[in-house]
Image 1 (cartoon, rainbow, N blue to C red):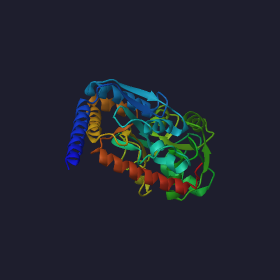
Image 2 (image 1 turned 30 degrees about the vertical axis):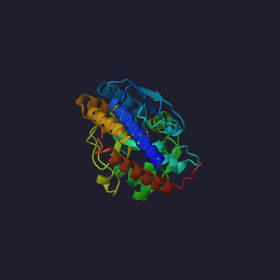
Image 3 (image 1 turned 30 degrees about the horizontal axis):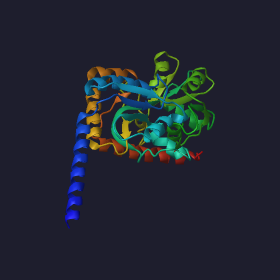
Image 4 (image 1 turned 120 degrees about the horizontal axis):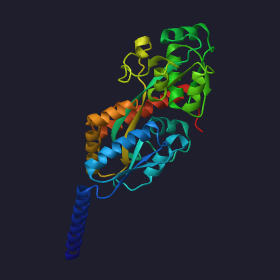
Length: 327
């Protein structure tokens, strides 16, 4: 009996000591630099958002925040790296729609689960898609564009940044809802797809507004409609797809911050508060809007997690609609 009491007392002491150490560690967090991994190259939307927020959050948290780029395989290399890290709040992920929303529906051997390997912290941005056409056929409004497609099935072409990418899936959704057929021309990225649309080799593309809007401003492309439910801050004169008679059309790309699954809740909460402080700063907001993103503040880490899960389901349905198979 004495032995059992001694064992129980020792166990209780060890548990209390462990809890005390964990609490102290969390209270001192962060006490060293934090890394934010980004699955896209420097200069991309996700990278730029990360650098703007990292600078502000580092001042708030009192520690340097370093952006680590690991581009490739549709942005999935960075999440794969972060998923293997310690859940201590020092290795974070800034990711987006493709790696966290579409990749699992398109890749057979994705080395992480977007829904179970991460601790959501908060959303940062929403990126509307903008449907644009070139100047060659005089299709300078959404109505003219769809009417032409209905009158001449498969006479129009559209570019995407690759099979199964968000730009491809958003366009497929539009074609399905509008009841029209066009010919898909996939590219390996936005640079060449935009060049061919501008040059008249392809009729249109439905890409992120931040990517194609500069060509609207320069007069080289027509802005036909945006993919979101409301008009955009960047150019409120551009109508929405819903306004033009296509129901239930509210699509966009998003960017958000994650920790590793198992990261202590107090650390996640501290990062959530710091992130939202940064997003609430007028200067930070101005910088993000200038990138073509719309600032989003999540209500809580749990609310962001629910958004990610719903978004994952939505993009899965669009992949199924596309008929694309996992590779």
